[in-house]
Length: 628
Image (cartoon, rainbow, N blue to C red):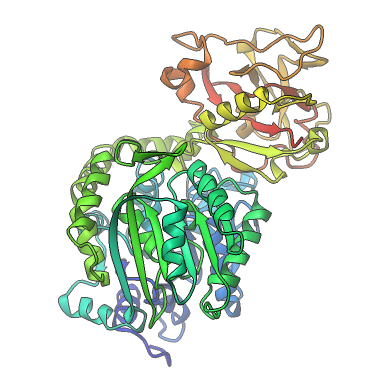
């Protein structure tokens, strides 16, 4: 097929795809999965096969898309993500993009582009060769069922390839059956060939520890290493920060780096560059001493290695994903230590009883601990890791697939409703990525962000964490101009050809006075897509940091069948669960003549109550924290 010296799994995957079959490839890190996926597209003209001229390579995270663009720059690829809109119309021959960009286009709600051309972008997806990498990271409640339904609809029309390293054999075989796809490896000979890959010529041992994960324990192991490079992974940001501070206090001469999901984009990129400089493949790791403390943010997308990796107990698939940052490259030796106990406020806690962020997975955590306990101290191959995955996740994966099958018809109907315009953008977001976060940016000058607030650097926080942060900041001594603000949309008085008026009969002509700003009965919207943003009634679950005379406080308002009465019960109130901290993925207010955010910011932590289709829903705001 090519002058390249191919591995058997790469050759077979390319042959199957060029013969009109779809493929699911499960292979370890360093097995050349990306090349296997691109080979049939690269050789389509050489072998004169009926194969799409365009390849859309989909990943679950932006950082992965950025890495692939750099690695395959010689193929002149395009990138399309929320942060880097290099090809919003999907014109390029090779596009690296994120799963939300692909699904939004297929559903006729493309992010960041005109709704009038939505069907063209859907056609771009249907006419391309689709690759889905790190498929195991898709959310089984939203992204996974939508992706599976899309692939079923495109069966026989669009060739596709799914790739993963950490699916149980149960999930792998069930997906292959549902999608009528070929699994690689499928035979003992193919699995044996994977064992012989150069990337598998390494030693990675797994061990358990009955001691709590502490700075002292990490430093004890770290000082014994020849290559003093250690990675510590905590399940929560709070514990990661605490351990980071303690490591710096106990070992000031060690270069300690912190990385978690609440970094602003530039800060995250800077931290990742430092990691690669200290933990990368071609670095002399015998010089200096470095420890990185991280959360799940390090599980994928960071190409680094270490001699020792310490991790809090997590589901087996996450443990194995994390272990990919230990003894990653050929010829290396490393040790992964799994801790059942950690520290909270200085006291030991059992992570099987404190599962966050893995709430509801206590049984999986217990099975994970038992599986690694039975193999304590053993060196694992890729096959050993697959055995653990099947042992721990087999039953739960079978249940996930069963639920997917049971809800397949209803899910497909919801997709059709969105594609036909019978549902709005909020329903499309539910089908794409169910994110339980509020968007937060930090600034002392929020008025400077009015024109394009969603372009401001931001990070995501769980609403409960945001509420906790508000209370903690309010309890601090000293005066502040504000603590948190939320974004208010008002009437657009600069209409243009790109916007049109829409009514808000459910507002009954009322105006809600917020300082000197009014919410009017009739607003302007960039497109109908932003109805939930422009026709809003504010609500909040924290007092304003400051109030002026004549300004009304926000208050709880009745939803459809209940009254939201207090912040303490918001998690248990059906109506407010619909808010879920979800955010619009495209910047709101972009476009010629669109200035829907000129109302500025209002004091208090708050969200938007959307008036849409005659029923109340809750959508999020862009929150603002004071930097002082």
